[in-house]
Length: 201
Image (tube, rainbow, N blue to C red):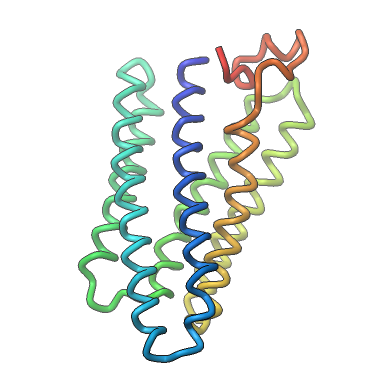
């Protein structure tokens, strides 16, 4: 169980780095949207970055999937499915002539919904830790709401969609960071008997 948690943690850590880079670019490019000519170039840049991010995460998720092995078929199939879906999203954004910032929001929505479901599923393993369980459940619900918001955001103007994408990415980072940086040494002796919280050994 500890090895599997390290794999989950590695995936979350890589995702945090990718999301932070994405947010940094969105913040840097946001003022340029005031200029219509530069706005078109900026939109194309963001679409290319999003396609690259989805493709990169798809490859990472595929590699992580095979690290679980046949003994963990659920994780293997889940990561493979998610990896193929991410690769598909990246390829679509890369080759589609009609892709826009709004398309990026629509493509990102299922990922937010799936992440929310994953948090809620993880919470089911923390019966002995009601505080952590409630935190994950709240985070999962928030993430699913953000996923629905991204679908609605498909109708927003470009600048509004960029702001929404940045907000959703920041919220995801805030939820992932505790899972990535939570340390074993901070757990009590009773907590160390719970594999889902023991992430360092």
